Image (cartoon, rainbow, N blue to C red; front, side):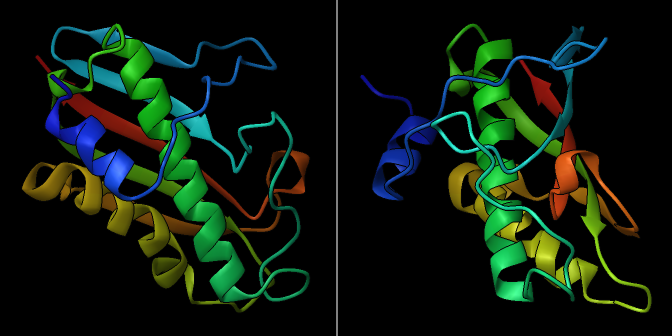
Length: 156
């Protein structure tokens, strides 16, 4: 029987991609006890190519950046499933999202953009998806992506 989180993903029309491999000297996640720390995820599409690039307020509008944040969240969930040996029902709580938005000076809409990720966590995990978070503006991100998000997740 499919677990509730997998069922919710299916209802949302989301197929989780194969988790991306690291491109530098780090690991995609670290599990310690009941916590999993997931490295920053970028808006990489299922085809292994960047789905979004550019600076918010210059090359990317806010709605497109929210879509990029949602894709980052999908990639976080894919990494979480890998950390849980393919069993998302082991997720107990999304504890925290740490988000970075590549934006122009003076831009203050980071929280609205990061809602693209936060909203998805609640859609998939319900009450257990409600989390603390940070939404920080920055002048650059790797590969010129508009958003990068990391996560801390409690598992069984």
